[in-house]
Image (cartoon, rainbow, N blue to C red):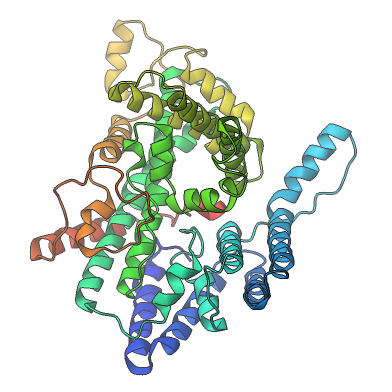
Length: 500
């Protein structure tokens, strides 16, 4: 089931919120948690995807291992943690990476090992990482014992289950144990408003940008793409992935707000960043936090010298790239960001001259856009074709814009084989300008304090003056936005991060 479907918006969501609030009021927090768990399980089972049983086995296993770690003495905790990590990563590898590694072994060795043919269970990366964090927190004594109902809800909680954010046990379980939902009318108002903003991002910006990007990336499979078309495709995807993923995160936060629960913020205007370090403080914040706490710091972080720090950054980002998918394209995307982070830190460590803000912003955005190309491309050959076009290697002819046809004839310009409409270009430009200059959703809704903020992230950026308020004017504006966004729902396109 998708957040951007009429069945979810007008049937499942109202029933889930009403049932949860009613159970909370009449029977208390445990009953409310049980109701939320039931709806979360139903939400997952209603999706058309394979290996749905796996999540329930994973939950039972990690619940038992986590409690074994909490009950073990100092000398016996580590074996339980190792067992949990090996089992979780082994299952993730089998379902997500085995086919890729088998194909590479066959290619390099000439043997023909059969492809396991395991289809990817939806949400496996998110619920696996969530439970790995739980086991590590149990080992560090940052998590407490809980009952099976609340642990099951912590993992399957439907607003975050499919595409995050990645949660910590200590953030969520105490909220499930609260006895009542306070300020319910305000929470409903704010939650519906945040959901409307997220839905508008998805249907009005992400999906149209995605249509343009798909056309150009598909054309790259057939031959060279020239300069303007290549940049239009890359910028279209730059807009699509931000509005698609941040739109999902906004909807998840909005749904949770209606239920009196706060999820962590996952975005903070990443396309306003003036360095790649700042970008990763603003983009997919909960993944950045996970990679920092459970990979970068255990590798040694910055404690073992500068050279080791740069290596740790590179390794962390390469593995972060592979977390997104099994393929060289994701590995290259992670390697680009890892190298850029190492370079940025070494530039500062060597006390090199400070780059002017405008140039720093331009370089950061250029790097991010160029790196999105392999992230989106199905193969490195297609990514290389797009890169060649963006660098001018494939030529500089202009796209076939209908209104400019007489001008092209007069100037003897032969248009590119890819055709755009002027509204397409205006859409991409509008999407990127909004991402670079407009207040983001958490700034718009900041009066309601709807999400959790991680230490080190809450002070990034300047908070604009504009903010949604509890007034009739804002209610009407959000209502209109919701109506337009809902009216624009087309073929119920999946969110990009569902595939991860």
